[in-house]
Length: 388
Image (cartoon, rainbow, N blue to C red; front, side):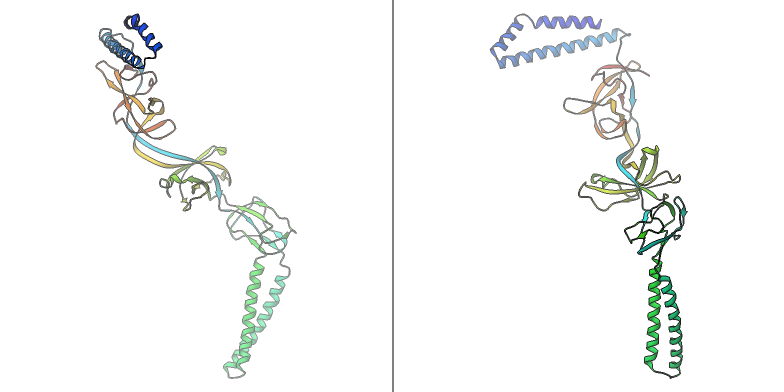
């Protein structure tokens, strides 16, 4: 019935716009009469708008007279406040400060290695030794001389206390003894540099040098020791997030190769902006009880930069955009009939997005009903029916 009325009205509109008026339009186009064409366009638009209004009145009358009218079917969403946490996602790397190559402090031949690859060692354990090239023998000889010097000094001191001997003899004995004590201390320190100790508790990951190899301080590594219990993720965060990301901020670390995601928090933020990429450093600790997380693994760091416990969230799919670039949704205004509503366009201001939702800052309120499924097929001020 609705299509019949529309056809009749459209036909009458076409007939009313034909004939002499159509010919005069052609004449206006041929003569390039701009003012005449503008006037003709205004008349046509007025007639067309009047036709649309009349068609709307007919449709409304049909609705009242025909209870079986077929309306567009939609589903609706009631606006309710919910907690919203937004995260910024950044590429990061897994690191540890307990990952060290051990170098000798003394030049010489690697005499012995007291650890094996994969062995767990305690902090302070002797791991390797460099040939001391006779330092130990020198130390023993110097200690014997020092004992003699001490005996001479003690006797000279006793005689001096009895007013026997000269002061210069006492000073010479004391100086000789003290000088030898300092030489012993320096030699012990030098001898201790021939030994390599574990700087922390960990696992011997790799033994690089072989027994008998010539060692050079700071140049030839002996072994690598790693502790996997104190791991962290490190990332460079753009400077625009400087005010949102602080120490203690909630974060998640996702390690794709292990199919693992860990909840953590920001332990440290840098106090320096890198002038090359305009970023600052962020560090988050990682629990590694299974010791599956290893240094230099690639990971994704998600840091909470915004939270709203009473956010108004709507699905991204219900948002439409007009010719001016304004975003809008369709509110639903209830009518007398059950589950029948009339659409009303509502311009909205949007905030931050999640995976499939976006926060609405203005344009809708708590308790409003909006079109969810079917938002792409309805128009403003259109009667629709909700599917429960």
